[in-house]
Image (tube, rainbow, N blue to C red):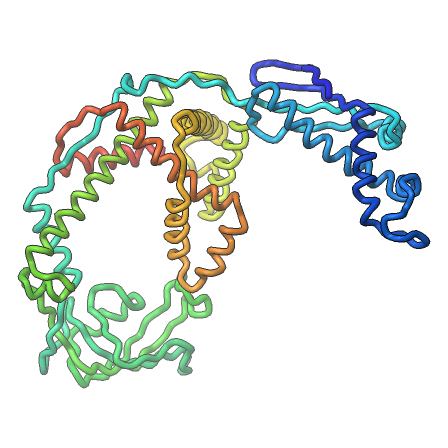
Length: 454
């Protein structure tokens, strides 16, 4: 094999690879000898077909296999010998002249082809200790825990039946109903013993309000109109009546913050509940703080690394981002006339975002490779389990999809790898810590979210 460099401009490479006729013929002869003992042709005993006859019958198809294997092997070897990392699979161009192709297939001419590709840049990693990083620290206060428990109590409200009670806002009614459209019952419009809390908006708009003042035994006729965006398409915008019977009316009974309430949640007592809520809030603060640190770190890494980007990677990233944007706009019925800026300006911004994402992706990948950071099988398996859980009833199909699609599995691996690299950098960079209030952290998160949206 001979390799000749035709182009070396920036990250672009073009090579000419020549595989000599002698090598191709040796491969061809070896392949014929391999199949000689397995092929069976009419008029010959198995394993006794002359090689010359095999060549006559299978010569062209065998040589095509040889050429295909030769291109795969020699192109990979050419890149390996140059110690370069292609950004994508090389674009290989084979001879197009029919006469030359025939000579190659006949073993009379060398195989010469060209391969074009972009290489990944060499990245000089920054000293992580020079990164200007800050970690926000929020201490959990008693009020935070008390407020969290109050919300938990609100979400676990009890109800106590009261004879003769006229339904008020936030009361719970137990009802039967039969829905009709144009005097005819419709599918899914009937139920018995349904609990409904007035004011929670669980039912069709206007339904709950018509239950105010009703008592057990009342049979109000509720009139509503299904919303235009209602889930059942055949009911959208339709007027309906519901023949309703109130079985009972119950007033809210707020649980007390005590051991009994904690035990109703399966805990030992109220102290254990406070301990659990404290840990949960600490975790929420830590997660929010980590989000801020990660954004800070990515900004610093981008500023600290300046190198040429492979145009094909940037273009691919841009096309993905732009496709997502235009698809969302089409789905929401938004045109460029509705936007605050022109399509050209938006394209420039998205190209900048594509550059940022490619640059950071290469830097994070280099950090991971250099420091041998890997995603373990157990970590990937846990991520797959979490993904599968998001599709109840379809677990088997989702699991099989990921098992059969390496690209989909790689999408699960990528964020785990990135988080491990972020944690690795944080350990070495030793960010300065600054105590802030819960409100200050929330404000910082909102500013970050606005920046991300922009």
